Amino acid sequence: SQQGEEDPQALSIQEGENATMNCSYKTSINNLQWYRQNSGRGLVHLILIRSNEREKHSGRLRVTLDTSKKSSSLLITASRAADTASYFCATDGETSGSRLTFGEGTQLTVNP
Amino acid sequence: EADIYQTPRYLVIGTGKKITLECSQTMGHDKMYWYQQDPGMELHLIHYSYGVNSTEKGDLSSESTVSRIRTEHFPLTLESARPSHTSQYLCASRGVAGWGTGELFFGEGSRLTVL
Image 1 (tube, rainbow over the protein chains, first blue to last red):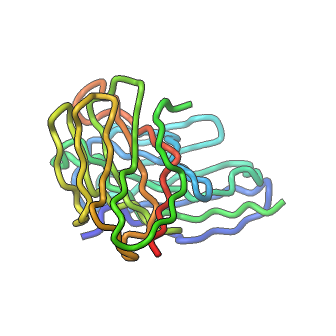
Image 2: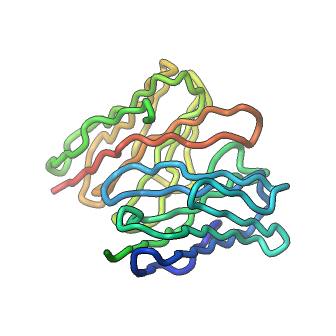
C-alpha cells in the first residue's frame, strides 16, 4: 500500500501567495521529511519533523504533523518563481529499517 | 552542497548492453540507496545498503544488481538493458545521528534511455 500520498498533485499560484501541500501516510513513523526536486535533478532535503513534534519552521517553510490523523502539511509563505519545483514528503517508518518511503509529490508552479 | 556524485548523468544505449551506473559519496555515510523515478512520478526504492558487504533489495522489484565493496562506492549494474529499464536512477546516502533520524543526500541522478 502507498505510504505517503500527497495532495494536490499539482498547484499553480502567483508570486507572493502562500502554497500549501498535504501528505497522508498509513503506518507509525519516527519522523517525516520534506524534499524538493527541480526538474531533472536530484532531491534536496528541506525539513524534518519528528513524531513527537507538531510544528516546525525554517525560513519561509512551515511544517505541521498530526500523528492522530497520520498527516502533514508543508506551507511555503510569500512564494517566489524560484520555488517552482516538485515537493515530496517521505516517511521514516518505525518498522522500515531506516528506509524512507516517498509520496507521489506535488508539482508547484509559481507564476511571476 | 551534498558530496555525492553520480555518473553518467545521461546514457543512451541499445537493448542487450551491460551498463553500470556509478555512485560515490565522500561523507563517510554507511547507508546508501538507489531509487528509480519515472518523470513526474514518485520514487521507488530498488536497492539499499547498510554498510560494506551489505546489500538488500528494495520495495520495487528490479533486474539490476548492486555491490558495496567500499563505504564510499555503491554502483548499480544492469547485465542486459531493455527499453523497460528506461528511467531516472537516483542514488542517495544517509548520515544517521541516531536510529530513525537523518536526512537523505541525493546525487543529481542518471537518466537512462534504452533503445
